[in-house]
Amino acid sequence: MEAISETDRLVLDRSTDAYVRFQPASWDRFDLQGTGTGWPPSKALILLEVNCQENPLGSKLTLCMGPGSDAAIRERLWNSAIRNPHLFKTSGSLGDWNPQLLRDPVALLTEEDLGLAWDDGRATERIRGRFSRFFEERLPAIDEIITACFETEPRSESNHDPIPPPSDSETSA
Image 1 (cartoon, one colour):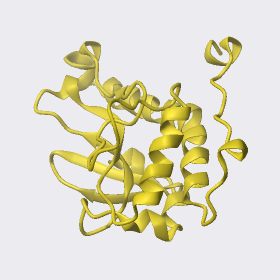
Image 2: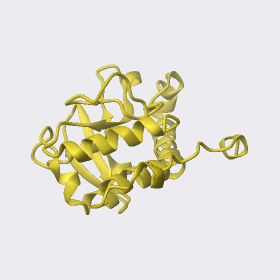
Image 3: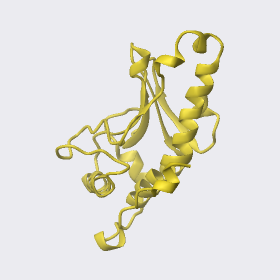
């Protein structure tokens, strides 16, 4: 939670022992983001979530969309996810809850983070590094797509082309 609250680019949402939810500050400025009906009290429609599993190796950072009162924005978000499969994972059809929209959720802990690495603080630095890489390498493209969906005038399909996946040279850097 510290890695999230330490940056002004992210807005912390409701958190419990089981999860930490947050969103980029850029989403918070849109009224449509407040049309969610599944996550009181924030009423956010789409959030990033760290689920804190009983087995810490199962804890992941993912993107979730809950139910909402505005079917059009939910459909725009879903269709944008379908058009960008290198960033988003969609399966089946748009339902009330779409808990795993993020392609390749970020595993926060590995076996090597436990034991001595945990005791001497290296695991904390590795977790911060995984968050930082996600925020720097993946979140900007995700943010661009979701922000475009939240714009008041929906873009036509022809004006809303998918964002291309990174080239091999960009991913190997």
